[in-house]
Image 1 (tube, one colour):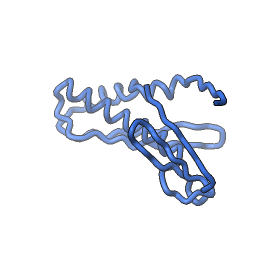
Image 2: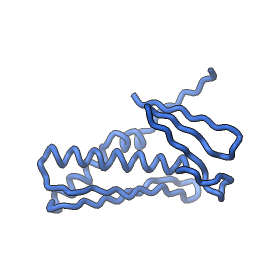
Image 3: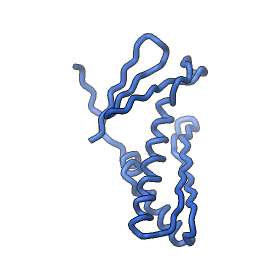
Image 4: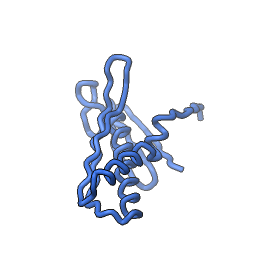
Length: 128
């Protein structure tokens, strides 16, 4: 399954992430003391959901031979006091009808990352 390693030194709050053979920099914006050298942690969370959504919908459209030209997911993490949620807006391009678009929206509710977030998961922390 998926695996990532995060490392931080003394530069507030630039973090090096390695996952597979990919390297990313994660940081906080200046309003939180970072230098905005990369996306913030919650940006990665919504990016992961967006990527999983559009990849799954592209696969579904291909399997159904639907004439989908592009799929876009605008994903926004919203915090209102103690209440948190993610708003996701889909835009589907191509000559697909409303029933097909509705079916794709239904499928979006069951993508792997969507289900993981909705169900929650145990996180086990140990010391090396």
